[in-house]
Image (cartoon, rainbow, N blue to C red):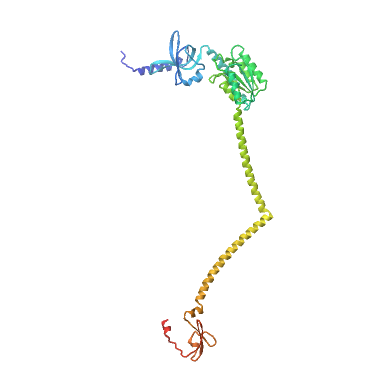
Length: 408
């Protein structure tokens, strides 16, 4: 008896590893009918794939929808699912994780598509060096598409809205079914001979069978040999055809092709107005700058002319004169102060001022000042000068020892 006991998660994990190690289940294609198809708000698609012998759960994750599903899948569709079969461990269920879903019967077309794509790519028909630039200001637009339907209507409406002056040449072509290939080629050749600015070749969306005319080598070669730049606008954004690789530019939709081919008249007019304003502003700035330069040169000429140089010398002389007057004024002010000081000092030393203070001036009979008793003798006449007059006197006594001398 086996005593090993396993948990549910362990068993599911073991089974999951078995599925993962099976080479067949890692890349398998299963054919069946779609049922219980649910588009989840997350973007994932859950459905059941069944046939007379059984059923299997399936899921297409949101990240694989753009390239893996090219039609609106619904219950009852006969499809071929390419993906891997694995186990959902938490639920203990297995399901197919789809990578690509095609309608049953379209598988052979995809094989042909990939083969032709590889052949033309090896021939260099997709090379960037052969791509012609789309004119930025195309005036004459050629359209190869069905004369009725949303595609041509959208292209014409958008083209006229963007530029009401654009000229449009429409070649009404068959875009699917018998004769479509020849009709598309004739349209490309006819419009190319008209010397237009750009061609739009395309149609609205559809299944791979509906779009197959644009996957034919003859159409691809006609587009490659066209001298006029060609924009491919086949189907919806998720649809891809051989013509998309050969064309000079691929548009995700016919409406987008019109946006790419026809310039916006209003945008260009607005841009030109903006350029005009900038040019005027630039011209004004340059003119103002030139005026300033001319004014500067004019002043230089005036300064360098004889009259200008004479005026400059006069102004310089006036400046020197002002400086000289200021210097003389400062020196005179200094001398005036010194004179006042000397006058005050002189006044302090004036004999008259001394006489006014009670002193007297004594002179001999000849008028010579007597500053010592040795210059006179008793009986000599002298003259005594005081503040308000002169007196005549005679020396009566001479005494060397006087009280005031001792005091001093």
